[in-house]
Amino acid sequence: MFQLIESTLFTANSGLFLGTFTSKRKDMIRKFLKGLALFLVIDIVLLLGYGFIQYPKAKGEQHFTAERIIHASKEKVWKVISDVGNYHKVTAPNIHYVEIVAGSGLGMKRVCSSPDGSSWEETCTLWKPEEEFRFEVNTQKEDYPFPLKSLAGSWKVETISPFQTRLLLDFTYEFNTPFLSGYFLSMGMKQAKKDTEYLLNNWQKLAEK
Image (cartoon, rainbow, N blue to C red; front, side, top):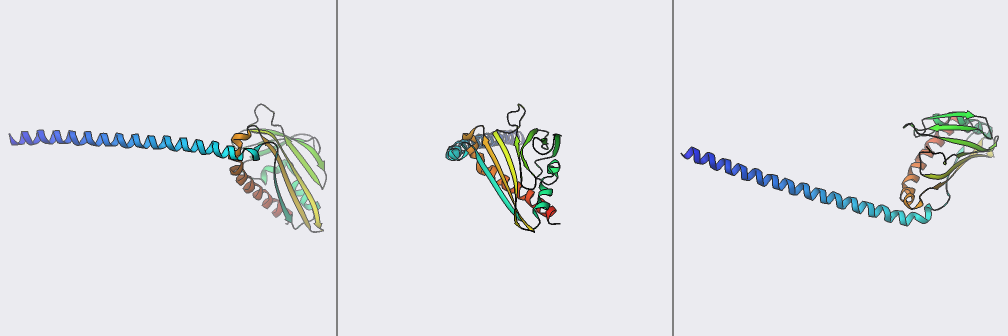
């Protein structure tokens, strides 16, 4: 009889314990979900707020510039940077492959592709041998993968001395949606600086060999 009572009490207590444990677990999950929802709301508010603050900076045409002093002649630096068909071999991993599909020099067209398979077309709109060249991206193409209204880049070499050259890069761009792009302006700028540094380091090594 005592064993039956003890068994009954144990079963009852176990059920009560499990019920309490399950209830606590549900409360914890509920609190976690509330916290997660609050975090997401705050994140969205900060996103929009930061975008609003950066909006004036992101409106219209923007410039990203960089330069590097290279200890080599202008002719040698030009030879390195004007190898535009092999751009993917020296630039950051975000460009997987480059193919020249038409022409050479002024009017040349090349297609660049990224590791995820997306691609875009660029046209050479300026070509001054041993001085400067410029490419403009066809951002109006339906399958263009980035939220940019326009994008172009120019590469220029200037003689400092017979064995010292200044290389200047100037990328001009405009976002499709400047309000939201304000948030990404500083974030994207950090990555752009990192990628440009990588490119300039590789060009410098090649030119100074």
